[in-house]
Image (cartoon, rainbow, N blue to C red; front, side, top):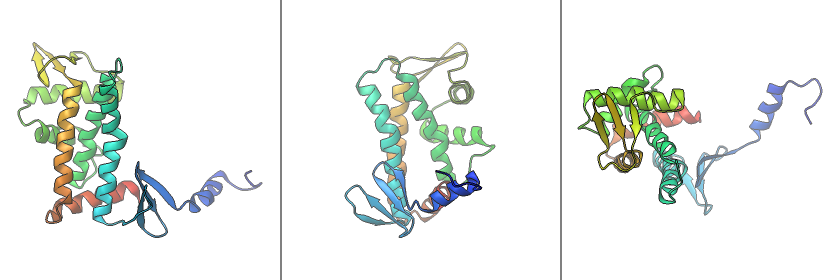
Length: 209
């Protein structure tokens, strides 16, 4: 029960101060008091750059990519749009780690950079259609915009027919997963100091710890 004459903000702040462990990914807890990670086997892992990379890898894989794979493999009807949203969300979120900067007020630029990295053969016309019709459509309007279509059977990732962009959501997810594997490999190489520092800037900013 909330004490009388006690503001809600103060009440919840008091409760939060007593919480010393946070689930930063499916398989890792962050212990605030000790400044360490705890995995599911109760192993203690330093909360340094390497520990943060492990949690980041686990978070993206288990909470997002594994879910998309499950939907796809079990052939859930109409799961393509959710699978596409998971792949699209990866673009901007990961580009922030790569740039070491927030994408606030600059989302389109970050997404374009991600598209250039992952899909180097994508044309300017395709990128513009994608950013407006797919990314903005899915995350602002909740659906693909006019002129954008999802085709789960087409062999190509992107296909432009007249002024329409046709995309295969499952193939799109495959490409983003490949990029993620490459990025994690880069981060785990301790010689890549600059990339690891940029990653930590965004991780620390997001976690606030």
